[in-house]
Image 1 (tube, rainbow, N blue to C red):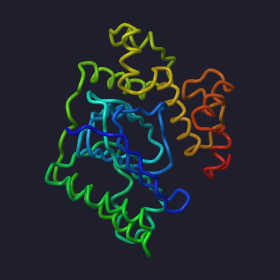
Image 2: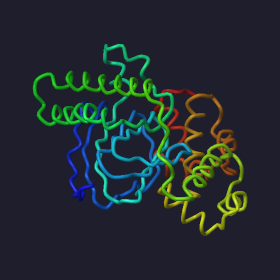
Image 3: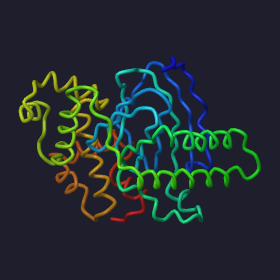
Image 4: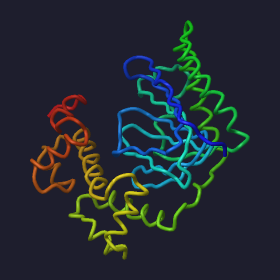
Length: 286
């Protein structure tokens, strides 16, 4: 693989938060400093290099030609692979932007789950052509470029659907003997977030020393064990705030917080807002 130089293109936007697209090339393999979630869809296409992607208890090693599909509100973060440099195109689009396309896309969204999809060498050129063309349309802003971008996004989503139908390829194997174990532990946290979990208890359950688990968990997920547990709990709280009429105190207890005040503080640290304000802003009335 050729040496990857730092090039970070502008983030192009359509509307305030309807559609974004950005090209990035980094030689140092930077990582997201915090677990991340947002109310829009995300497509992360790797042009070169290798990334370890963590989302919803999964750890996936992405290589050239891999596309990460992220549903709204799903937690994810990235970290370095065995080679630090990478080159990617990142797209974000709101559900409203997608449903606004009168192109029969109802069955293509939402994605069944956030996951990784591999494009073969034969399929990569067409996928990359559409992504680069979207970037070019947003850069030049010629008349009716918004319609052109919508059309290209529709083609991308159709292409994703066709590749999924035609190929059911498994994810690449782990790049480190501990990767499967860390993925197993992350899945355990996602299933037992309401329990009083600690790093020491998880280490004992999976027969690993706490210090080694701490190092490996940070390496493969991009954040500490306690941070991951905290965000998983807040993510579940967000779901409950939007899908139930339960009181904040009850939700705090159900997702593993002993004290409501601690829950409120943690929720604001992770989301930037309070639980009640989050529920109100999302249109759910108490």
